[in-house]
Image (cartoon, rainbow, N blue to C red; front, side, top):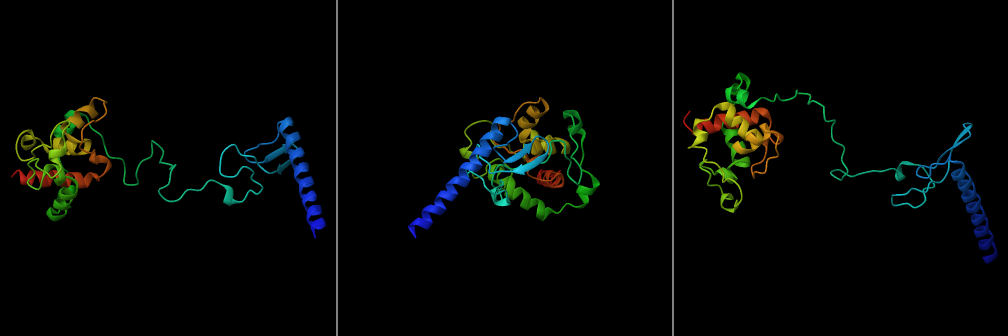
Length: 217
């Protein structure tokens, strides 16, 4: 029994040495890819040998089936984002200058689709934690924001005199300060999120209408 086992082991060792010798020769000749095992012999034949990848969980890859290819679970990195110049199927949102935002007005489509209850929910989920249910800047986390500008009072002050387009821009770019910095090509350090990445264009316009209604405008 032991004799048969030893014989089998010797055969396996011999086979391994032959394979290793062949791989070594191919490495010297420069036609062997150690990461994939793909081998080209003088342009005559393409072969697949065991691979010795520089990275990965397998030091030696004998087979090339899908099990050994990179695979990632949902939400696991690295993720592949869309091309930088890609456009959503609904179209790209138009960007304006500061002057154009000031003159911008809500479209008839956004006006007709406005629902006060839904707009109130959007405000409650995204805005009330800082600006408060009363829109006066007295939300539950306002007292913890010790750096930068405090949440704006949306009922009084500059917000009460702002145009529709200005309020839309401030929501989109994360506060009045964030908008000014965006127009200057600078990063936004404020605590307010840039909602153009979180809410649709129509949802932001509905927030504008909701805020202006609370301002009795």
